[in-house]
Amino acid sequence: MNFLRLYVLASLFCFSETIPAQESRPAPNVLVLMVDDLGWNGVGFHNPKSTTPNLDQMARESVELQRFYTCPVCSPTRAALLTGQMPRRLGIVDVVTPQQTGLPAGIATLPATFRAAGYQTSLIGKWHLGSTNPPMKQGFDHFFGFLGAEIDYFKHTNQRGATDWQRDGKTVQQEGYSTYLFADEAIRQIKEHDARHPFFMEVAFNAPHNPFQAPEDLVARHKDDGGVYPAMIEAMDKSIGRILAALDEQGLRDRTLVLFFSDNGASLRTSSNAPLSKGKDTVYEGGIRTPCLIRWPGHVPAGTVSQQPVAVHDLFPTLAAAAGVALPGNTKLDGVSQWTSLQAGKAMDREPFLITSYDTALIDGDWKLIEWSDGRRSLFNLRSDISESRDEFAGKPEVAERLSARLEVLKKDLPVVGGRPARKGPPGNRRELN
Image (cartoon, rainbow, N blue to C red; front, side):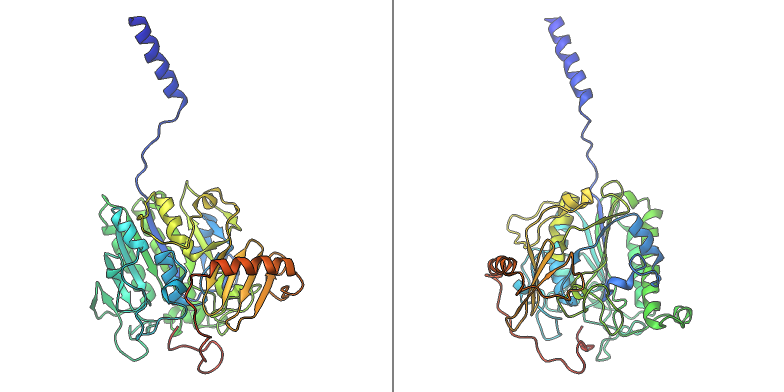
């Protein structure tokens, strides 16, 4: 009997040596860095003329998503990030104006889901999803920034001259360049956060969105290559570098998943998105495909490029999967977790998805079908024609028919929206809104 017991114990010991122990890892911090109107060529790792050394370094430490898709303008992208739903489902297809409700109440949001899992949550920067249900009613413990579409970078006033600058729901007066102030706040929160709880922090820079303003020293530095606009980008990059350095100083690099992306492509008034076609306010590639990086040492392969198509509404389930955060049972999502592909650093098969505004783009591998607001349809092969110069809808009838049928299925329960409203001034000139 004693011999048998010793044999069993010895067998168990040997068996345990062949299987690595499953260490319980602490929940990671999640830092989302979103910038405003930065197009494909606004980063040095796509365009050497752009001064973004900190983002270029981050790219060397990250998986770069070269097929990351947002919405054509600001508010819908922000709604998709926070809800995991196509924003058209929420009635948001354009920029949210002060008269509109914006993000509705009572829906599951990314910050609320992380907060329920024990995370400290904060939004720093731009909201632009209405004032009826502001950030602290949508799952953020803290909010520092502005509610509207744009502000004066130094005065922190909106287009009507009123102060739009608050902390936790209360208007505050503060001096300084907004890009730098957002970095200051992020660094303060990183240094002071309760180490017993992970944090979910979204830093939503308004740079390089108009009005075009930058610190004088940077404007002087760029006097021969564009002046204010590249200076705004450099100020943004410097601020991101300071935030990433704060993570290192606190020993949090390996414990923090960092996501960087732009909310839509650049306006053609400020920057070309070549070789991508067109720009902001369109569902062409230049309007909806933006720079995107994901860094998490030891969990995603550094210095790799992924061609996995990922939509902004995929981020909610993807970040939850990465952090091990359970989704509420009643969560309605259009997005699908892409974490397995991102961990591997390579593309995997996925179902087609939609990017919706007044116009709708269906992405299915190399193919892209666009349904314009007037009912016309166009078809492009993104592998052979990244600039979308050849409409193949008539020339590829079998592909057009297959994707059109899929489009009808995917959009069948989406609200119908009217045609694109008339714009004031030249095309794309909506400074008072976007």
